[in-house]
Each structure stands twice: as structure tokens, then as C-alpha cells.
Length: 155
Image 1 (cartoon, rainbow, N blue to C red):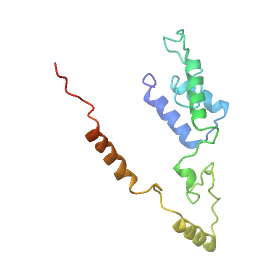
Image 2 (cartoon, rainbow, N blue to C red; image 1 turned 45 degrees about the vertical axis):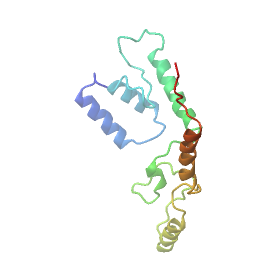
Image 3 (cartoon, rainbow, N blue to C red; image 1 turned 90 degrees about the vertical axis):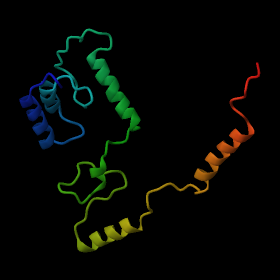
Image 4 (cartoon, rainbow, N blue to C red; image 1 turned 180 degrees about the vertical axis):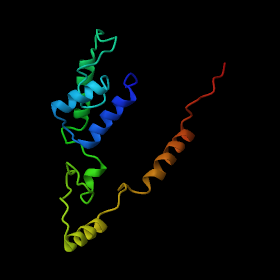
């Protein structure tokens, strides 16, 4: 990314902002790879990369393929969604809605029902017993009183 000029970066940024997609077409991938040739963290393949270490063992294409594989495995095959995917009333609407989110309906009755459903939803937080965060550290400290982890050596 450091070897590309400011004009190339602006062209690439304009292209990405005007054509947002999760699975870009081949023309888009080729355009981005010519503008920013060696950026491995995207879904765009480094086709036209001209780095000097292109003959090293983990080749650039192998590194890119492995990083893409790890990204997809970490999601367990689920589609990539962001916080925008969970907001059906944003303008323009998201390309892919998150799992469990219904499509936006713009009638007044539907909006009030959506608001009531959001207000009835359970608060975010953990459902653990409040005594557990108190008892576990206390039990660890008590075990230190019973069993000395650093016995004194009598030489």
C-alpha cells in the first residue's frame, strides 16, 4: 500500500465506496489489484503484485489464499455482516441483512410494532449468578492461605 500513489489510493477508495459488495466481480478485483497491488487483507487477489520477494516459499498468492481461508473458517461459513446489517431502517438499506433481522417495513403500524419489539428485547449482558465473580477470587485467595505456594527453604 505504501508503494501506491495518492491518486491510485483515491481511485481505489472511490471505486470501493461507489460499488460496495461482499463478493466483488472480477473486473472490480482486477481494478483494485492494479491500484493497490499488494494488499493481502482484502478479498481481492494480488494478481499484479510486483514485490521483490515474489519468489520466496510462501508465495504471495499462497499467503493471500491462506488468509482468505482463515477468514472464512473463522466465520464458520456464515455471511459476513456488520453492525449496519442489523439496522434495517438505514438509508440506503444494507446489501445483506444479518441473520434474524426482518426487512424494513415503512408503515406507521409496522414501525411502532418494530419499536415495541425492540423495547421488549432482553438487555445485553451475562446471565451468571452474581455471587460467582465474588466467590471465585475469594476461594483462590483462601487457597493461598491454606497452601503456601512459596515455602521457605531452610538451608
